[in-house]
Image (cartoon, rainbow, N blue to C red; front, side, top):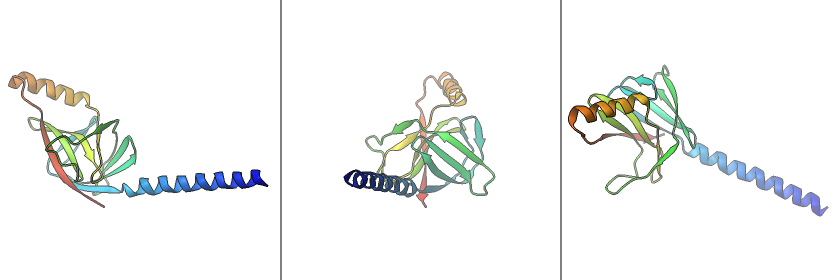
Length: 150
């Protein structure tokens, strides 16, 4: 009898734990953003426009255009932490700018939490190298676009 009681308790605990994880995953929700310029994500170039961003897992996001025509899944292997003077309280996308090229670099989904860092693509590394050569070692320019949680 005691063995059955422990088994039932363990099963109930597992179900509750899975329910909490599910609720936490759903609470991350999605953000909506209007990007005013064309930008690159991995090996894809996305046009300026309205997008929704949803976290699929700790290390991946889905970016979808408002019209549903464009969908890109991106890996977010790194954690981005707000430095001094940076806002950690607002949902936003952070882009690296090289001349007139923009590359999605960070996604901040939830107020007050760390952001997620995207890996640099080969195209971004090449743009950075070209800018460095052309301008004698210019600093990286970051462009932030505010988003709203949904």
